[in-house]
Image (cartoon, rainbow, N blue to C red; front, side, top):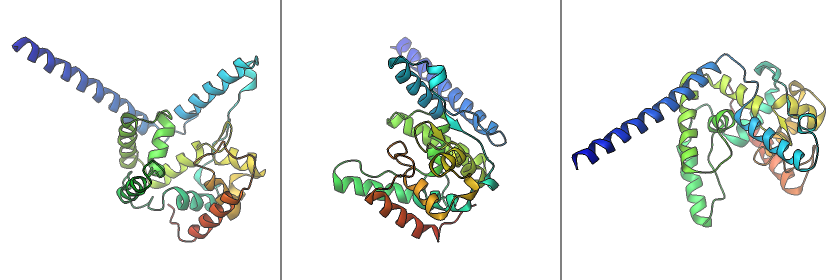
Length: 239
């Protein structure tokens, strides 16, 4: 019994050390991105691998047929309209919370309970950035917990302005289209700095399912969503 207890304790210590090592690795990466712009993210990498696999199945050369559209632009060269639209659509309390919006989480849980299924989420911009930078699209409690931990690391290491700058530059906005600049050019043929309020609201509206809509496509649902976002933009606070 003594040996079994010691063995169990040793296993727990090794496991704890492993978890701590992983968290320190994530934290080191977060600190690196405080002043360094990411060239590729985990989400971009995963998307690229999926597209290359599809290309190979179709008999195409993956190296030539798969290219991600992504061009980094600094915060000042992104339209304030897009900043307001994304905050209004994705995280109205962005400037107030510390990475997780507990009020939004409670509302989402209540809504899901009423519907009997998951119909609402409560991921903040910081959580979405954590997922895009480091994690996969897998849905699990373990991944969600890691996402929350990284979101906390981002919040204690970076300004809100930097978090939003990173998010706008790595968010997915179409088939192999990442970041505000590539999205603005792809969907509207303009740089991110020149997006209008309506165009910005459209880009914010498609964020939950960016590959579902073709260039500048409008549907009755999407038009209503864009109207709502444009209304909310007036009171949206950005860093």
